[in-house]
Amino acid sequence: MRNIPEIKFNNRRVEHINGFELKVLEEFISNLKKPTDHDPFQAHRLSFNIILIITDGMVRHSVDFETHDLQEGDVMVISKGQIHAFDVHSRYKGYMILFTEEFMQKYIASSTIAQINHLYNYFLGQKKINNPDHNQTLIRSLKKELQRNSSTLPNVIGALLSIYLLKMNDENDRSSNFIVNKYLDCFNHFKLLVEKNFSKSRDAKTYAAEMSVSYKFLNQVCKEIVKTTAKAFIDSYVILEAKRILVTTSLSVKETAYALGFDEPTNFLKYFKKHTSCTPAGFRKL
Image (cartoon, rainbow, N blue to C red; front, side, top):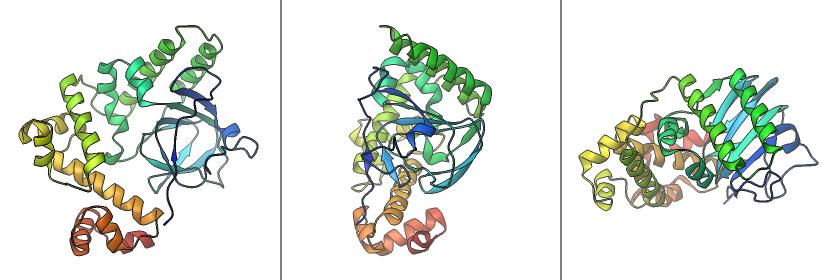
């Protein structure tokens, strides 16, 4: 079985900000500065968030096994838990902004997190946004502030990211209406439970009971935050994990079914085909 490495946030940063780092892409993927804990050209899972900004040329970048063509001015948010890989044949020019969930919770207002939440809902479809003016403004401001290294630096960096992500959310043409905090907290709880227990249960009512909320309320929360039902969210997550296993391991379809919590491989076959219009074996070949 070929395992996907999970990349932890590197605390040996020069910015001296817990949970934040700005990287120059050319330096990151060069032979001299290639990370020693993993190969960036092979699939690896993130334990933090990335904003990938392309400032010149065109590249092909893989996120959750889908290839995206990115060009000058394009930006893509890659979320914690996603699997991505750099393209060995592309010449990357631009920046990577790395930040952890802890940094976001501490230095970005909860109302802002609620508004930009859709940017991180990768199961709804990975999006790229062409945003050259905002990109240049952000990078220029970050570089200027990082040279100061003052006691207020993390707060300033959080403010700059907040402004940028809010503008990016507007460019994404998704709803940026204020979301009640209790909905966001509930959804985040639900999402964590699904990530932890999806192989044990795919029943939305079970998760609602564990959270001590009604099934109707959980559906309402999911529709507010991610514009889908609780059951559809669970199914999207299970299918994504199935794809990750099929593409990155040598487990058979039968073994994959059991790993995902299906009692019978035939049930997994029907489930996978229902949600993808493709068999697991067919998807693996693709």
